[in-house]
Image (cartoon, rainbow, N blue to C red; front, side, top):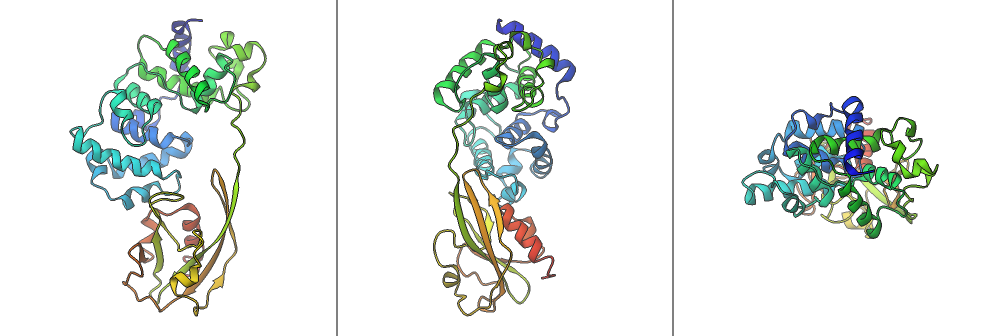
Length: 349
């Protein structure tokens, strides 16, 4: 089937059943599309929507975002994960302000040169913001095309990705670029799902090779199994006489890069020795499990009071004391926020 017929059937379906009430569609601007596309990388729409609302309410445009501190941006991102995305948003906003007259560039090549924006995301922004036809290959679209064309192999593999990209180019319509981009993403998100796909209702099922050969479940091939490492470490909830808690900023690279965290010994350094707390009475708290893509964490928290570090005095340049009205507004890793909300608020500290 030619691309014109595929796109025509897909757009007819989308006109009747597509998602037209997503917050970044009203109003639709390059800035709002960009923010949404970065948030949607490896994250589902239903999870993104409340974060998107909060983010654009605080940072309405590139100028507002470029003027923000990293802490402000990470605080609004807290809990969404993959925090490099938030840091790249801030970097890109500042580059746009400096080099592109305060706007996102309007070509895919220049967009893809910005931090955190690859070829597919650049095309998604270009297509939706300017109503242009362009190839996108997010996870949903890869699944649609792998099934439609019965493309073997894991889509994350370079050769398979290249094959899907070329195939996607051949299916593009002549116009309605923004609608088509949303339509093919919607097809993957709502019908051509990973499990229990609604093939009977699919607008292109008659020409879908996987459906026609009763082999939908075989496509796309699964990602090779990821080796999950296990990591066990301590975190300390240390409060002073005013109830402020000691937090330290994580290094820019690595797990939870740039976020504020409870002091931890995940780098192998003895924690109590590093903080000078050998003589402080620390009480163990129930362990906490936290799963990242490649790491299964077991966090063994301790809690205690210390008068060794006076209020307002930084123990190290990357450490600060935060009061009850301050730390809830910081960018915190999900397990750290959980520990603080459970053990500080419940204790009335």
